[in-house]
Image 1: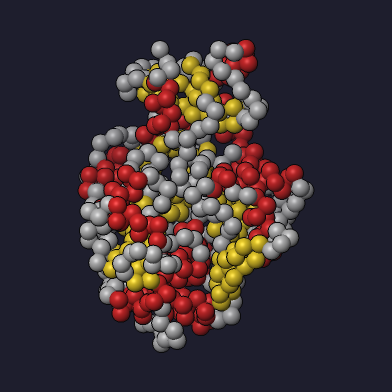
Image 2: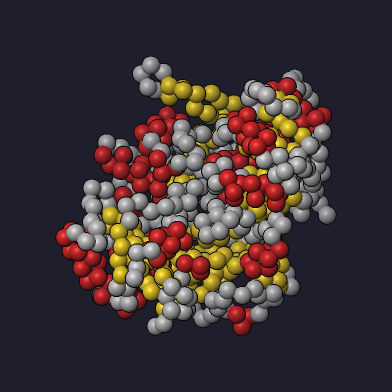
Amino acid sequence: MSLYNVAQTLPDMAARRPFQRAIIFPAGRDRNGRAKFTQLSFQQLNQLCDSYAHGLSEYGLQQGHRTLLMVRPGIDLIAVTFALLKIGAVPILIDPGMGRRAFLQCVTETEPTAFIAVPTAHAIRYLFPKTFKAVQHHVIVGNRWIFNGATLDELKRNPCQPFVCAPTTPESEAAITFTSGSTDIPKGVVYLHGMFRAQIELFRTDLDFREGEIDLPGLYIFALFNPALGITTVIPDMDASKPAQVNPAYLVEAIQTHGVTHSFGSPAIWKRVGQYCAEHQLTLPSMRRIFMASAPVPPTLIEQFTPILENGEVLTPFGATEALPIAMMSGREILAETATLSERGHGNCVGRAVSGVTIKIIIITDEPIAYWNESLVLPLGQVGEIVVKGAVVTQQYLHRPNETAQAKIGDHDGLWHRMGDLGYFDEQGRLWFCGRKAHRVETAQGVLLPVPCEEIFNHHPNVARTALVGVGKRGQQRPVLIVEPKPGYTPTSSNEIGRKFTAELLSLGAEYEHTRAIRDILFHPTFPVDVRHNAKISREKLAVWATKRIR
């Protein structure tokens, strides 16, 4: 088998574009509130990676060592990640805000032999030593404090010779990342070097990423692809664990200062940025594309950016941690052709399959499917579970055989991944998203799907968003619509505002066959959302909340 190490893309880029800026990182603000920055060229970044790779290798890290990496977003996160990839070690990337129980379970399942982290993260291993019992190499990023192990600064070798990348193959483990855990405990997703190669190629072809472009990543994991693509990364001045609370002025400042050409972020981020630009009559002429994903993107949000993006457009990629990306949709096509259908409860159109990816719709079942059969496939227009196959599709969950069996379908030429999402294809070959399979509501009269139902009510002028949940036993569930009102509007189920609001919403639902069965409406001040994107509604928590209030 041929050799391939995704980290080799960095020295290749350093040779081709040595003096292009690779990373720009916020470094505080001056007395007038203007942002200050530090930066590294591709040549400097590659040299820093080599210095870390030599030091970590001398410290004992070897090819195949799984390494838990908990470093704040910035230069060291990217440099250490590529250093590990050069060694052939496997970085483990876990969202720090997922909660203690989930975090400890994720660490236990990955069995890291090395731990590279900031001091506060090292404190966790002292509190829960059994969870970290497999760790043999401890590296502290920052001051040692009271912890044993080496500091990253101590391991840095400078000056140093170029580090020769480990002889990994496309089938070698490259990294382990985790699902967002929006419907259960996050699952470890195993990435191979060949999968990274396929994703990089897709970014070049289908997404038209070009060397010399400038990216502002609203989700930091995407910054790890940029060195391989010859793209400058501008690290945003924001709290990665609270993207919905981002200061939009800081993002706009970064875009305008550095001439950012593209950015990925959840609708929660772009809603704030769009409002800020509209209020201050600002445009973003350098932007070629804004990617909005991780949750359904309201057409009204896309429309808001039409005057803001003078030379660009909104794109809505669709995928999951296990398969990214699988489909793409242009904001222009959404506004021109599918927005009206979405408003009428047809779901959210997420576009056509990207190159090298096959998507099909199969029957809805909660049971495992061991082997592929074409009889599983549903006809055009019929809602079922979305399944996908291709080079960007991961093959397994780490140490989760039951979940792997539940999510993968064997085939003669690979595996199909069951997305856990429901949808259908239209006559133009476009994929429509109707919500998570786990969130479907099964009543005695039939199945209700979250997104098509919620879209009917989301267009009420006083609705911020809605969530459809089921109360009771599956098959006999009672559909309940939970409404998050817009700020400043405070209805309750008992006051006059609430009664009027409820009547208006029920009237809206009565206009459509698939929402007429919804007769119970509750008001919730602020929906719980996922940690990673602050955009995916935690319907499981809302269902528990609703159960206590529905008699």
